[in-house]
Picture (cartoon, helix red, strand yellow):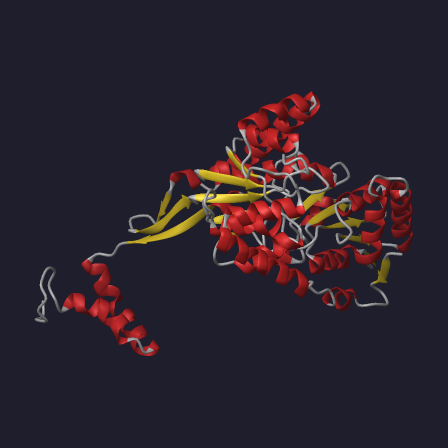
Length: 439
């Protein structure tokens, strides 16, 4: 049974503060060993890992043109159409972001001053696409397209092979349709290590984006600093905030959409009455009965689900902000007004006709979102993940003379006289001379 917290009698914030990130020492040790193996043995370690965990007969790390050609013959036409339409929507969204941020200009300057910034695409990036029991062509699109729009010249995808040593046809087709030419059939911690460290055939990348399991996330944590990362992800999570006007069946469907992924996923429901909570939970129970992933969803709700009965909409939004959910559905009378109260959420879906699944596959923004409360400070994967800012400054003799007292004072305050001398010396020694006479 899912835990129900009545905010009138129990402090919801105390309950939420008791949530802790998993610290699995066994997973840490396994990942450490895999990373070191890849560091030492490169491609051989990758093949051994793939054969051990995913595809016993895999012979090659790289996806071939022939494999992708064959995928087009296997995929239904309606799936190909869906992939292409999703790509266009995601591309359009991120191109609009790119244009509004003026990233194409390459440099921003303060008027009449030689101070500014250069905005540069990363030289390379890796995209991790999960595999295993499911296929995720959407992750190719949602993580790869922002990088292409940003102008990253080298993108590489890593994804675990199926038992026959190939990637799922939908993933292969998505790779070609998006326009990512290089993909490797490696998953888990080994894939992250390969992208971060490089091997004989895989060039190291500057940043890695994309969701994964606990081994992927632990590898990201351990390799942070060796490579840039989109974030340290936890299990997927969803929050549905529903007032008494919400359609219970639709709210239940949104609640179940994300916890369908895995048993460690979290589902949060916030309502303004116990009657509405019971109505939604009853509907969720009905929808789970006989579903393909019924056991997964029931376990996730029982082990990681929470229901909060708030006294009013203001308190409901405060609870939601404390959760800082990956996905937040606002099934309320005036979702735009409620949005003004929402500070922490990876993606907010407004109103009854914006289902969770629309955000996952078709609306345009990336579905790779901050999890485990990271929406307090983190953002969805977007164009900005694939660019960096470089400060640019130039001062004249007059400029330097104006700020010289500041530089000298800070050198004195902080105990670094050589710092100060870096400016002072320019007024003691003429350009091109090594003497110390005054100018």
